[in-house]
Image 1 (cartoon, rainbow, N blue to C red):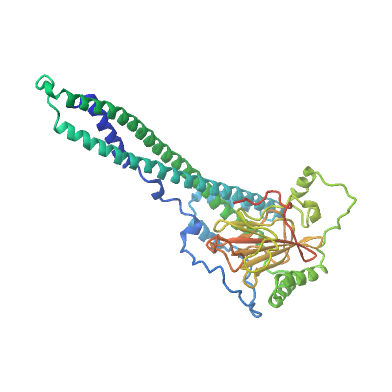
Image 2 (cartoon, one colour):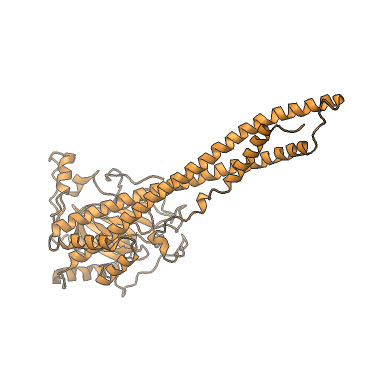
Length: 459
């Protein structure tokens, strides 16, 4: 019994729908925008059990990473910003020349924009990852439908090639004809339902592709923000250094002594203790906290921190509990008090970040030390007043000087493309950069829980 044209068309349409799925590109195979970290050769991760490096008494830390005109030109060459926009940005910064207050405010604002862009980039990448998973699920269903419909079409094709005789010619074959009619009547609705399901999956694939294009546009826009702010921060740092050709004897001596202390210290506690002891004789102490003083309101704290002209901490450190800025965006992979993977207890927290992530000052303070130390990578130690210190370890570059006063949220440096030294041992391994953050009071570790304005993103 031959298929009626309408039913045959339904079956053929189902086959065409399945064939159309092959024409949609696989989202997982599309190339994401290249990040600055991916542009260069990949670094080979060091083993998690890397042995501690011995301190080199004769080796001094590298100087501050201050962008030179050549460095700025190299940064410009790597950007996709238009030359017109680059010139506008330069003119904007040049107009601030000599105005340290405006430069400070611009630096902090640029760092905040970088932080928001980094968060958005991470969110977009997660959404793109989810879209890829959804696409594989839909394509898996389509592959299954393809096999099922192919088998049914093969059976129907055999019936078509050898149809039963017409009833008018051979009445004795009525039973066979009835069976064929029942078979066709049962199969065609199922094929129609399957075709509808295939159509829905094809539409879902199209929707996934459109969503992916939108997310890629958002990702590209955020990378443009990161590029522009990277150039802005480098130019601002260079502008703030202009006119300071020779450092004062006092600051030069302070840096030399800090370097000498770092060469002799065998532990972070010893280093922080010796640096803090030396700093106690320098006029970098904030007013002692008055236990009877009324608690400051959030508005009073915000007003104090908004003063970008300040050259000392806006508030006693104890008063900013709950207002500290998280130094970087990332995932907290090791809490205070947890096992550090080396048989000890962590005295701080460890945050896995993006490659080349920005690191900012968690609070106001003076830079007690910056540079490489043992196997912690580049570290920054801040004297935040009232015998408190903040330690940041695992950076790749540092852009501040010993003795410099930094305001909360001001850029301190950047992370690298992988974990530096034995900062951490976690399931994340050494493939991702990890920032170690530690607060101390009277050189004793302090649990940082409750000190942050924005808690570390949890995994």
